[in-house]
Length: 524
Image (cartoon, rainbow, N blue to C red; front, top):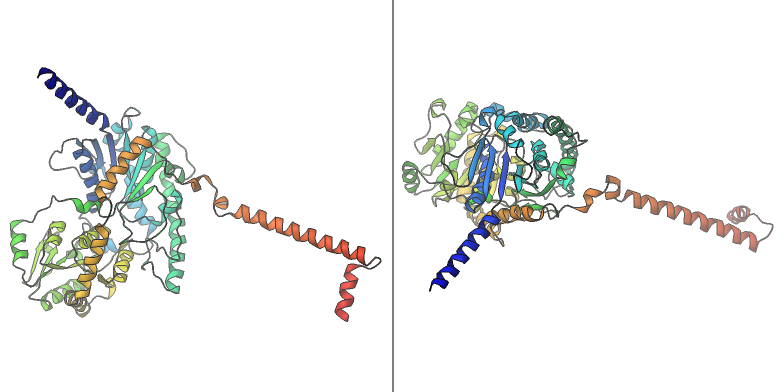
């Protein structure tokens, strides 16, 4: 009996040792000041902590309650222009168009300034090997990739957008504008001639501008890590793989290398949200249906022009008895006259709202995170895009017939009401989003399990998925040296054949010049 207890104790100790041995020390770096984007990053880090890994998180959004194995390294007090719930309508308009310089200053070089933060400096002084793997937010403030080599740890990139134009080529992927829309384009993958022309020009313009402005971050790499690099591409070579917030069923279908891992909808697995009693009562009593409207976690609807606000008021009145929920950060500043079938609040538990069966329509700015939530919970959309990827996202949803997209500059009460009533009354939109939701969720592993697996994979194996294309120069990659060699060979062969023919003609017709023979035949 004693031997049985001893054997049991042995296996328990062995099991505990195995778990301790497999636990990783993980550093997450998320300097962007957008709370909606952090939903994805924070969700992954909390799940890694829940599975026993020791997690340190550099970011702007510390947890309100302590989480086991999860440590916040707060840089909010030293952060740049704070995007979370802090942007007026007019400020949002500044991001419209190809405003690459403005975008990369706010989200890129300003974010790199947080390397000066005392809390970040403490991390940089850690011993080499202090972390088994480092997860870095990519796309804008890519200067933080250098922390990986500095601490001798492999880097996993993560991006809350789809794979943006400027990250494809540095990882050996093709950016073919004939069927891959730019992040700044307004079209789906199925383009007309003029859309392909526009997309081609935008793609090359964006890539060149991004490369130029992103290289400015190299001064931060030299200052904080003592490394003098030629281009940002040298940093991208140090990224083992990239977790991307997309899935082929919803986003673009394109060939990518094995180090691009699709984890679209990872954040939707977060089941922490609950409806407050008043919201629960409002939605339960919305027996004719409810429309949910928000401009996302950044833009304040109440700062919109009076014409736009009045258009919404008119639409809300005309769709009654259907109710509406709208997010208004500062309700006291909203124009008077909000219809009685509308309820507003400074913050909305979006996932919990979209889950409610009485929510029939989502009016959205087209952000990727929110629209993925709508697809998961089978809610069709009316989109009003502002900037960056939002027009492209909505163009894709329109092509799949799960949304109607409106032009922000031309919205009237009639246009808005017609779009809302069309989606509410046409059952095809609901059927299409139900089918798309099924495709989006039908995977071998959930998005969260996939992300966790690949983080642990990198810690075990380091970078082994990099494309061999990265070892080639641009002319080697596009076979210009091969085609040039073959062209020269062809010219030499043709020259030799010509010489042989001329020699044979001299032998057959001695005393005659081959050129004279050719000329005489023409005169005959």
